[in-house]
Image 1 (cartoon, rainbow, N blue to C red):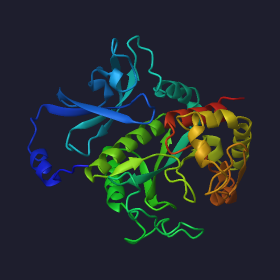
Image 2: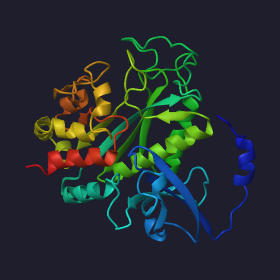
Image 3: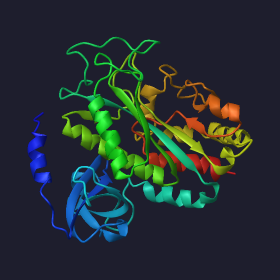
Image 4: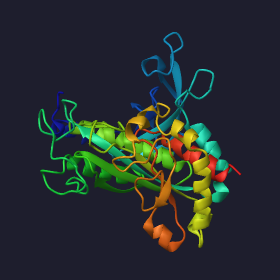
Length: 362
C-alpha cells in the first residue's frame, strides 16, 4: 500500500475555490449491497438540499448494477451532508440508484423503506444503531496485531473493551477522526467505544426518526472508510473477521415507538417482542446481505450472541435475540434492542422489517 504525504495535499486543499463553485460528491451503494462508491462534480452556485443537484449517471457495469451494452445507472440525490474532506461549502450527496427503466436497482432498498416509514409515521418510530467494525493493516491482518501471531486473548475479562493504553487500544486516531467527521457532516453520531476483540470498535448513530437512520448510517460508513483511507488503514464490516474465540461484529438495532416511550410502555414493548418472535426467520433473511449466511458464522450462542435458530428475549441479557435494558425495565418504558443484525447489514432493510413487523403487522 502506497501512502501519500497529506501535508502536501493540504497545500492544494487550502487554495481558495471560486466563490460561485460548490463541489458535490455523489455517494451510492453498489451492486454488492455493502460497498460504497463516489464521484465528484462541480456545481455553479450553492447547494442547500438534494433538489439543488441534478440526476447523474455512472457505469453500472463496473459496479455490478448493469451490463456493458446498457451500462448507465441513474444517481438521484436524496440527502445532503457537509463535506469534512473538502470542507467549507462543499457537500456530500447520498444517492439512490435507478435502472435505465427508472426501476430501483437490486440493492436500492431505500425507496421501500421510505414508503414503510411514511405509513408508520403516526407511531413516530425512533432508531439508534450500534455499528461495530474492525480495522485492518496493509497486510489485511487486524491492525495492531503482532506479525504472525495473536494479541492476548479477549477472555471473560476483555482487556480491549473500552480500553486505554497502547498495548490494548489499536487505531484510536481513526476512531477520533471519524467521530469528528460525522459531527461536522451532520450525521447524528451518538458516541463511540472500543469493543471486546482487539482492534474492533463501535460507534452509535441516532436517535433518528424513520428513514433518517438509514441515511445517516450509510453516510457514516462512507466517512469511516474515507477517513481510514487517509491513515492507510482499511475497515471491514465482516460479521466474523477472525475465526475462533474472538467476538464477531453486529449492528444492534435499538427501536421504539411513541407509545413505548410513554408511561407503562413496557406492555407495548412486550407486544412488539411477541411479533418479532413470530417472524424470527424472516428477519434473519434480511439481517445480513447474504440472506443469513454471514450471521451463521456469528450467531452461535457464544461471544455475546443469541442462537441463530432459537428466538429469545430478556432483561440485560446480551445472549438474547432481543434485550431490554435494565433501565427500561426499571422505568417501565423505553425501547428494545434487536441484537441479531450483522455488522454488514443494510440499515434500510433492518429498520423497514422492524417497522413492518411491529407497527404494520396487526
